[in-house]
Amino acid sequence: MFDGKIEYKNIYTCIFKERMQGMNYFLDMYKQEPQEVQESIRQYIAEMGTLEKKACEIAKDHLGTSFHLLKSNGYIDWCKKKQSEKK
Image (cartoon, rainbow, N blue to C red; front, side, top):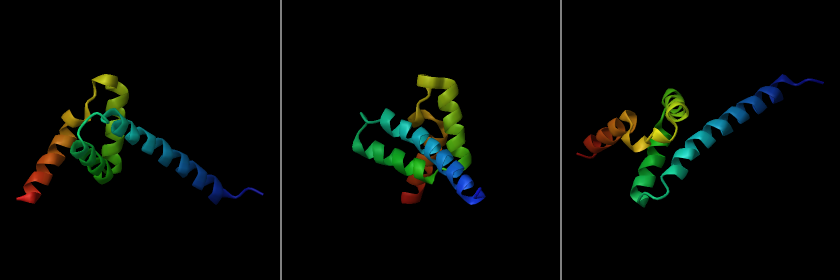
């Protein structure tokens, strides 16, 4: 018997895992950075919306090794926002 709920659950699980692997790419890429920077990247990724994550994935795919998360406008704006919140 076909159970549509299980099928949809599996599709969403696959999509979620794929997206998380994409974001883990950024964590792996910056392992050589200081712990403070790595934690900042983790926080930034955790706070990203779906659209921001998709934009990062597209940038990574299109730019390849030229893409640098720490130099991206989104990350820079996020850091500025965090700095202003601390004041």
